[in-house]
Amino acid sequence: MFRIIIRNAARRGSAKPSHVKFPGVIYSGVSNSGVKGRSLSTPAAASTRVSAPPVRKSTTTARENKKSKKNLVVLGSGWGAVSLVRSINPSQYNVTIISPRNFFLFTPLLPSATTGTVEYNSITESISGILAKESSKSLAEDSYSRYLEARATKIDYTNKSVAIEDITTHEEHSVPFDYLVIAAGATTSTLNVPGVKEHGLFLKEIDDSRKIRARVANWINSGKGTSLQAVVVGGGPTGVEVAAELQDLFEEDIKKRIPDAGPDTFKVSLIEAMPSILNSFDKRLRKFATLQLQKDHINLLTNTAVEKITDKTVYAKAKTVLPDKSESVEAIEIPYNMLIWATGITTHQFIREFMSTIPEQKDSKRGVLINDDMSVKGVADVWAIGDCTSSKYPATAQVATQQGTYLGTTLNQLATVTEAPDSTTTSTSIAPFEYHHKGSLAYVGGNRAVADLQLWSDGKMSSMGYFTYWMWRVAYLSMFVPAQNRFLVAADWLRVKLFGRNINTI
Ligand SMILES: Cc1cc2nc3c(=O)[nH]c(=O)nc-3n(C[C@H](O)[C@H](O)[C@H](O)COP(=O)(O)OP(=O)(O)OC[C@H]3O[C@@H](n4cnc5c(N)ncnc54)[C@H](O)[C@@H]3O)c2cc1C
Image 1: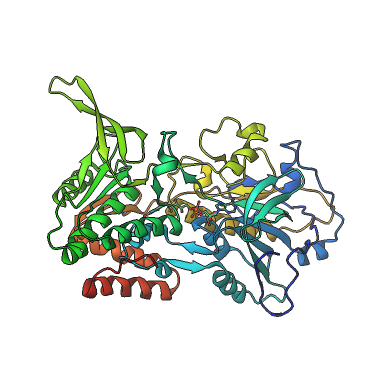
Image 2 (image 1 turned 30 degrees about the horizontal axis):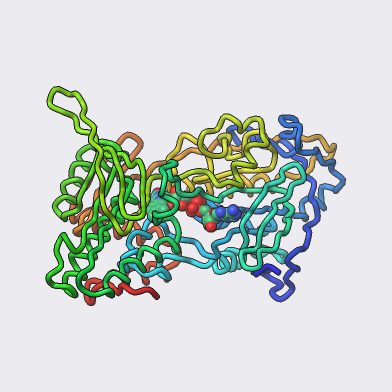
C-alpha cells in the first residue's frame, strides 16, 4: 500500500481510497475571445497534432462537465511542482502529487546545511502540509488532493497513465491521469568522467548533504593525525558555495576545536574547467569571488579539466595560457579523501525513455522540449516545467517557480472552459510564458556574497561584499513561504553566531 495523504477540504474523513480511478472527464473547449495571446491547444484540438493519444468523445452535458473535475497528476515535489500546486485552484482539479521526496527542499541553502550553518528541518516543508494548506483555501465541497510517496518509472501517454514504484514497499502501480505535469527535476551529471559515480559525493538532495556532513563529522571525531582534503569539482554557484561553507566551518569552528590545525590538516580545492568561476555572473563579481576564495585559503584551480578519479586521487589536465597566448597543458594529480561533484545536471532515465517514444522529442540534447505554454511537444495533455525541460532558460529555482505559477494559472483557465452547446471543439487563448529574471546571488565565504541584480528590464546592478551578504540572507529568508521556515533559518544563523556549528552524524 502507498503511504498517501488525502486532503478533502470540506469533508475531512471522507477521503477517497488510494487507488480510486477518477471518473474520466471529457474535455471540449469553446473559444475565449476575451483573452489575448497564444492559443493553448485543448486535448481534442491537440490530438490533431499527434497520432498517439486517442481522441475521446464528449458524452457529458455542459452542466456535468462543469461539475466534474480533471484528474491532474504532478510528478515531483520541488520548486516547479510546489509553485504549481500553490497556484492551482483545488476546487477545479483532483490533484495527485507523485514524488519520492515527501517534502519541498529549499535548495539554495543546501550548501549551508552541509556544514550545519542551517539545519535540515529549517529548509524543508512537508508536502502533506502544503497540500493541506492549499486545500483549506478552497471553499469547494469536493476539493481533493493527495500525495503518493513513489517514483514515476514510466509515462504511458497513449493510455494516459504513469507507472510508479512505491519507495517503501517497491510495489508497482499505475496511476491514470487526464492531465500530467512533469516537474521531476534532473539528476547530477557525471560528464561521463570515470570514477565519479564510485567515489564522488553529490549535492542535490538532503541525503547527499548528510553524507558530506557525516564525512566531516567523522574526520573531526577521528582525532589528531588525520587530515581532510576536500576537492569540489564545478565552479558554478553550488560548487563555490559548498567550498566556501566548508572553509568557513574550518576557520570559525574547527580551528577552535583543533587549535594547531593548518592547511595540512584541512584543505579545500575547487576545480573549474573554464578560465573563471561563477561564469554566469558579471566579470567584476567573478574577480571578487576569485579573490575572496583565495583570501580564505581555498586552493582554486581554474582551466582544469578532471579526466579520471580513483579512490584517492583526482587526475586532471591544467591549461596555462602563456604570454604569447599559446597554451601549455599539464597533467596534474590532486590527492583527496572527500570529493564533491557539482558540475551540472542531466535528464532522468524515465524521462529519457518517455522522450524516446515521441518523434518531436528525438532531437533534444538536454530535457523535454516544450512549447511556450509549457505543453510537451508532440503529445496532448502533458506539460513539463523546471529542470527536466530543455528551454532557453537556465536550470534555476527562479525559472521553475515562475513556470509552475504560470502553468497553475493556465490550467485554472483551462478548467473554466466548458463544452459548447453544439459540442464543437475549439481552443482557448493563453498568453505564452514570459520569464522575468530577478537576479543571481552566490555566497563566496567569509561573510561575503555577490549579486547580479535585475532592477528593471534593462537595468542591472552588481553588488558584492559584506552588505551583499546580508542582502543574500534577507533575500533567501523572504523566499520562504511559511513563516516557520523563516524563523527557523534566522534562528539557525543566530545560533551559529553565538555558539558555533553543531557538526555531527545525527
Ligand atoms: C545545492 C543547490 C543549490 C541551488 N541554488 C540555487 C539558487 O540559489 N538559486 C536558484 O535559482 N537555483 C538554485 N538551484 C537550482 C534549483 O534548485 C533547481 O533549478 C530547481 O530545484 C529546479 O526545480 P524543479 O522543480 O525543476 O526540480 P526540483 O526542485 O529538483 O524537484 C524535482 C522533484 O522531482 C522529484 N523526483 C525525482 N525523480 C522523480 C520521479 N522518478 N518521479 C517523481 N518525482 C521525482 C524529486 O524528488 C523532487 O521533488 C540550486 C540547486 C542545488 C542542487
